[in-house]
Length: 384
Ligand SMILES: Cc1cc2nc3c(=O)[nH]c(=O)nc-3n(C[C@H](O)[C@H](O)[C@H](O)COP(=O)(O)OP(=O)(O)OC[C@H]3O[C@@H](n4cnc5c(N)ncnc54)[C@H](O)[C@@H]3O)c2cc1C
Image (cartoon, rainbow, N blue to C red):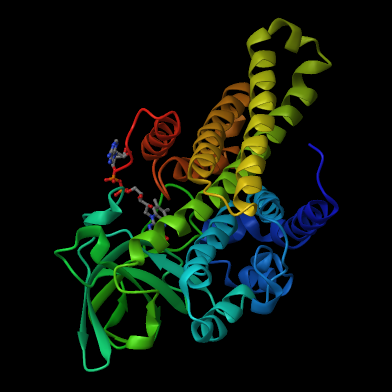
């Protein structure tokens, strides 16, 4: 794939950082479940967290694909760090999309520079795929909002300085009653709930939020009352592109392990000629990796022209996250039993890759979104 000078710059910077500074620490930190806070700060200093933001907000004014390439390179080395970047952006983008200049000055600039860590609380115990069924409430009382409810699976919650969360300011209005709020970690009534022990991504923190009469100043309403659902959908479109880059990183890493092993053990000995199925797997993975990158590039192109890119983002996320699981599976088959041990990182890639098919909208939900958009543009469905 031909990249621009800017895209090459960000890809190389991220790769160099990941290879030289992150890689030596990955095994130990992942084993201990140690959150990569230090690296997140470093990514802020390097400008990587701010790649897609305007200079006026502390960003680098670069294109969206530069950011995806950087996320890919980092996730290739450490998916837990890549996911922490994704979650930080979920907690940053809504402020960029809907914040006042005052909110941008106060929160967005330090988030873009990595001086603050952001998190995003949309998922609730009874509201995952159907974000519109949120139950957390926000009631306006004497110049503040009082928030009550629970958020679950909030990435980086134990370490975040700010949280963008959804809450209903009007239950009767359904999704048009959902509003967005910026919460600071030390607000009264905000507590961090239990940290989840996960299949993979063990160094990425996944905790919950308890909002028990959490007092939020009126100025921390993000956008207008009832505008939250729209802001969250816009945030998720950008987030899905991030997950596409993240999944591509894992897929590339597993692919390289599989190639290394095949070259060392089978190509020279001629065994590869006998194992046609292995050659088939390599060819299929190589082709799909190229296709996944092109889908992500196209989604970024559409995004940067300012058009809606819902379909493109869902396609990129769906294809790349399915591929990551597929390539990890192929690497396990080709390498065999060594890939099941932690002598090789393939077993970690395999455990980590699964999240891509669930987080930020499951693959089933992506397919619903894609089908709806395709039918809409072909005129066979009247939009709801
Ligand atoms: C590691 C991790 C990190 C996360 N980080 C965050 C975060 O930072 N912030 C946040 O808000 N959330 C976060 N999440 C939550 C994540 O976005 C949700 O898990 C996801 O949206 C799916 O919701 P659910 O798990 O409740 O599944 P459910 O909605 O209960 O779905 C269960 C199954 O039913 C299927 N299904 C549901 N509805 C439909 C439908 N209409 N049509 C067809 N099939 C359907 C789904 O595809 C899935 O297979 C995280 C999750 C994980 C695992």
